Length: 222
Image 1 (cartoon, rainbow, N blue to C red):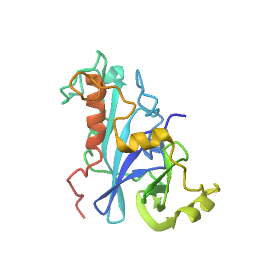
Image 2 (image 1 turned 120 degrees about the vertical axis):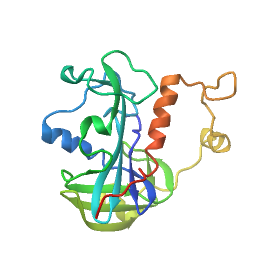
Image 3 (image 1 turned 60 degrees about the horizontal axis):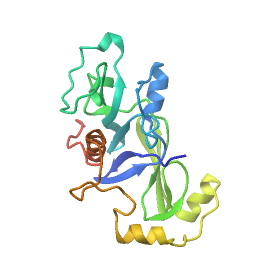
């Protein structure tokens, strides 16, 4: 399975990946609807990337992005798209306001009741699960109806035992690993200008996902 681009979660102003899948999927199951995408990259099989932020004890959904969202017939022409990047007819970029028009950009995630897994330490470079590699430390947040009820920090070996996995040894560095560490562009196609040879659409998509790795800049009213 291709490593998936994780959702972002922001805790006390620090940005982390969320390795629990996307809690937004539970909302779509609850309303018995989920967005349909004409095309999805293999590294975002759910079709979208979301940003989550914890304020006090409350979990909020504060950002959402997906491309090639097939707009339902009853919404065609009724959803203004502020993006400069043009989508094919009948499609648009999926944004938070498309799903929560009356609540964006701060959506209290009261449908979330689950444990959120957040890697907090250095990545160890050895593959584990859909979201990449093992990390030195982890944090879990037990969320009930959108409110954080318990937080626990774990070291790597204890985390592995908790999830029923074998804790991996420090991986050996291959020749390709060393080349990539010395040159972050190793193995990637370059264009004539020396930049990565990416299509405009992919460049746009990566830029929007990168923007979700920053706090939304707003806070809920206490």
